[in-house]
Every structure is written in structure tokens, then in C-alpha cells.
Amino acid sequence: MARVVRCGLIQARNVSGPEAGLPAIKKAMVRRHVELIEQAARNKVRILCLQELFYGPYFCAEQEPRWYELTEPVPDGPTVARMRKLARKHGMAMVVPIYEQEQAGIYYNTAAVIDADGKYLGKYRKTHIPHCKPGFWEKFYFRPGNLGYPVFETAFAKIGVYICYDRHFPEGARALGLQGAEIVFNPSATVAGLSEYLWKLEQPAHAVANGYFVGAINRVGVEAPWNIGEFYGQSYFCDPRGQIVAEGPRDEDAVVVADLDLSQIDEVRATWQFFRDRRPDAYGALVAP
Image 1 (cartoon, rainbow, N blue to C red):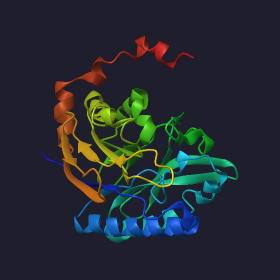
Image 2 (cartoon, rainbow, N blue to C red):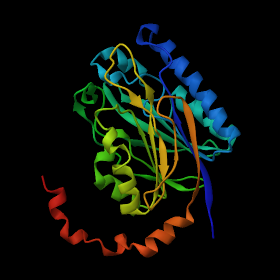
Image 3 (cartoon, one colour):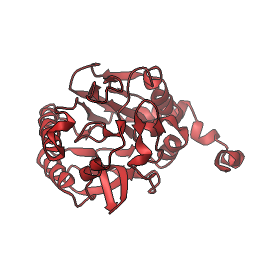
Image 4 (spheres, helix red, strand yellow):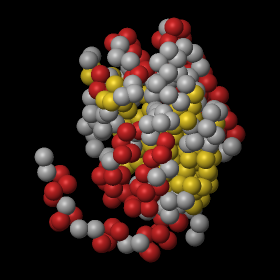
């Protein structure tokens, strides 16, 4: 029997430069995303994911302590509180990626998960933290996540979150599948020339290997003054067979919407018994130092 859930992904460009000041940048980006959330609601989206660090530019292109001022506690900060109200208003579960402060000097790249009644379900902290050219200096800003790979049971589906650079590591993707995720969302910020050749390769492979749906998000545009490259959009959903079923444009703000039939998960796993045939007893070398 079909079990269809309408899901959405928001991809957006930064709407103001860093010279505007951090409060103004944050206010403008939240305002823009509220407009796109309302658009998703009009399209009857039931689960919606925002892009990585959605309320600002990709500030990791430089190493400046001033960006620490964008941090908030989770779930007790103002952004999560506002998104909980919107989730409740629209009956929509949401994944909200923000810059989290656990305490002074301890910061994480985090996604808060909110159910359709506005209840805060928990959070995922980005596990794998890059520090590489061109301009991905994330170890300056984030500690590695320490919450494992939680799966959240929303009103519509069991969902997991994997953030940006995490997608290059199959181990967490498998952990999410083993813990029952039906849809895995990967909010990202990545530029052409660095990762585009992998963008439609790795995550469909995760979907196939684990028999679940993936929603992959990338922001759009070139962000001054850093100009580390073009954030090339093309957010998409793929199904458990690795087929892309909906895709956003390369250079425009968009709400990417897809109707995902979760009954396809059982069909695929009945054919490809990867979970049955895996050999954890033989994988010790994978976690050796």
C-alpha cells in the first residue's frame, strides 16, 4: 500500500553582504526563509528541510571570531522558537540547521528537528568537520558532533540528518539506515569545482546502499567578499533505487518538492537484502585507529 509524504527542500542565496552587520544579516535571511517556508506550506509540504547554516552566509570562508556572535542555544534560542511556531502553524515537520552554542566557547554545526505540532524532537550535530581549501575553515568554528546518528520519529516519517561534509563518509549513512531512517536530509554548502562531480554520485549511492530516500540541499550564488566559488544549488530528492525524483535549479532560490512513497523502501529492501547480508563481525578494521 502506498504511503506518500510530500517533502520539501529550501535552497537560497545570501541576501546581504557581511558589511550589513550580523543582526541585519540574520534578520534578512530569516525573513527570506520565512517567505519560502510559507511557499512550502501553500504547496502542502509535510516535512521541510532548510539549508546548512541557513540564517547567514557561509562564513567559514574566513577565520574571524566575530561570526561566533551568530550562535544560539538549541532548543532555547530565538530561531528554534520561531520555527516551532511556524511548524505548528502549518502542521509541518522541519529540519532547521543553525550555529549552536552549547556554552561559551563550545560551538556546533547543528540541525534542530521539529515535529508538525511544534514539538522539539532533538538535534543532530555535524560529525565530520572539514578544514581545507578553498575556504572551508570549519574547524575554526565547530567542534565535531557528539550525539551519534539519531533518528527522529515525526508525524509523517522517521528521518535522519547528515550535514554537508558528512556525506563523504558512508559509515554514518549506514548507521542512520540501521536505526530506521526512512528519509535522510543532508543540508549543505558546497561550491562548483570542488564537489560538483560528486554531488549526484555519493548520496544516491547512500540511498541505494541503505534503502531509503535522501534529500540533498545546496545553497545558491557567489558570496562576496570571499568568492570561494559558486554555490550551485541543484538540491534534489532521490529514491531508494538512487533515482533523482525532483531537482532544483542551479542559480535560483527554490522550494524543491517531491511526493515520496515510503512503501518503496520495503519493496527495494525485499529485493536487495543488504541489511541481511552485511557482516559486522568482519568490519573491525573499519573502526581501528
